[in-house]
Image (cartoon, rainbow, N blue to C red; front, side, top):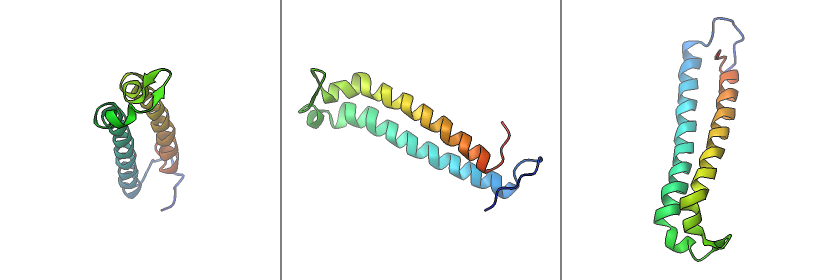
Length: 93
């Protein structure tokens, strides 16, 4: 698929491909967020608690701090990836 540089915006095919790429990106980022916040903070806590980070068990650290840091990183990643997708598919913002 090529990027058309017309001022009229994306073609219907480009819009469909853009939306598919957007949904794929959101799905991956939400899966990472779920794995870190729910998985590391609750499901895998016992295994992670064998490691200590800053004097606190790692499972506790992820539940209290780590998931927030990962969430902020995911916001930055999402913003950058969406800007790249908008350029690729000629979406005007």
